[in-house]
Amino acid sequence: MPLPDARPVTPAPATDKVLIRLEQVGRRYHVGDSEVVALADVSLEVRPEELVVVLGPSGSGKTTLLNMIGALDSPTEGRVVVAGQDITHASRKELFAFRRHGVSFVFQTFNLFPALTALENAEFGADVAERPDPRTVAVEMLERVGLGDRLGHFPHELSGGEQQRVGIARALASGNPILLADEPTGELDFQTGVQILELLHAHAHTGRAVVIVTHNREIARIADRVVEISSGRVVRVGPPEEGQVEISDLRW
Image 1 (tube, rainbow, N blue to C red):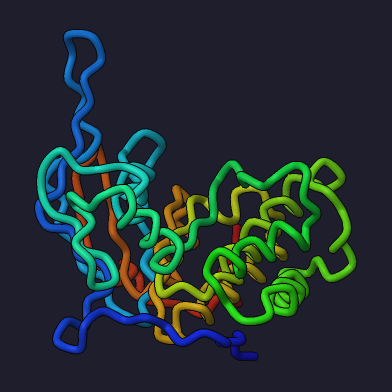
Image 2 (cartoon, helix red, strand yellow):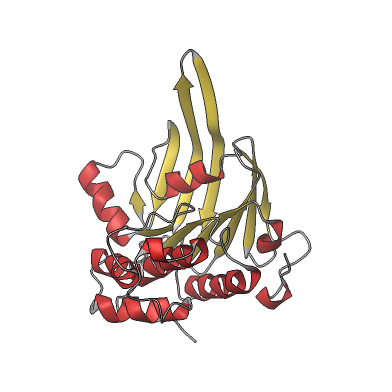
């Protein structure tokens, strides 16, 4: 079943079919007298209708890479262009507008508003992105993640898996051209995880791009492309090593 799309996707300029472009991006931190290299010389392109899985162990730089794309962090070298906008040195005002209409996040730590119900949390995603009738969109997304009967519950009344699904519903409700997901199935049982991956897969193939960060190699099997990262460096970019499979073929 296709996802509702009340607000048209805002694509990159017609001459540029790339939604995400990183050019020799690096991120270094200074901790006391030491320099920590979180990312080094990362170049990557993601196009509309691609589901890309960034694969690597904990501490490899996966989340830092996601934060570069979503303008939650800035590179110390290189260039980041997302949805047709160079965000490398963008102003705070420009970044605020970009986050509203360019990207949506699924956070590993949920980041729900504790004083808002599941419905209000999901509605926030649609409202911030200025979608028409945000409540209707929010209800639709919560039903799609299997929480149609939990609309009035607050986060503390939900399990970890249910909170994660509210976060996913909020991201989907924005309708933004790029969705970034940090371990979106980490708190979910297998059956629910498969349901969420089906939603993300469908979302990508409505002209958007979805980037999933995970350490779960099984999830990488459904990707259009896999980006493997180790010690802050991209070590492989390409299709799944044993070929792309259907979501129904996954096991973990």
